[in-house]
Image 1 (tube, rainbow, N blue to C red):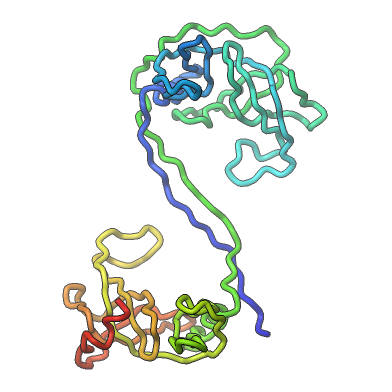
Image 2 (image 1 turned 180 degrees about the horizontal axis):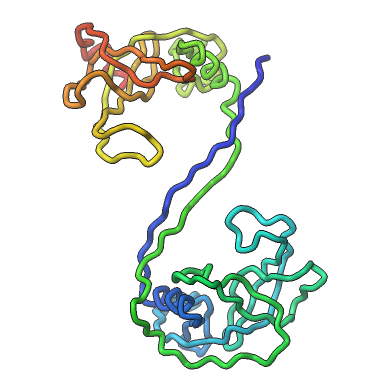
Length: 313
């Protein structure tokens, strides 16, 4: 059996959100070295603050300053910090109830080792040297044996408040395409497209999935398809992707390769974007060393009749 491929894969995108008055005040306060909570109708102070009471669903807006000192309520030791975590040396994740608060805030606790951490220990905020209005303005917590700090009863109103944040969402994992797609990818390295035929309905799927999506039966019979194909439908891309060196506008299309019963994706080149059309006959353009076609270009053949590809739309 050929070796099944696997490779690291990263999915990453910036997530932008606006802030309401409560979260805006909280993050702006961190920038100014002020920790704010919000007071509920029954007198509890929630830190970090929320817009609505989690018990009664009452809207909350009564901001109150709490101290930058507090008590560890529970913790867990992190032996191997990962990328973008608060500290690059082993530390504790701790829930810290700040003085004046009734709930605990999760953050990193800088300590020499797990033996130095215990529930009930006193800690204080270590502020980041450069603060921008984010939770990372608290660099971490650190052990503290002094008196509780006294908050200054800040009103929660600031000049130049933070109104929105951009957070990078990222997922790192190892992807394995499995037996069927491994064979497909290996065939692409030889400049050909290989699908698999269902033993029942006899449809040929490219890329192969290892099973027929209609019948649910395992597929194993390999079938070479193409190289030519037909544009079944397409879109014009007008927004340039950060990681693609392709000038916009360009066309991305569904292409039904000859002999296939499933259309695959591909970029259309060698023709002005406004001349691409359904039924256009195309062929792959390979670049040296590539594992897949760079794009598809017109073959010069007459357009395919609609009835020949309408079931693949």
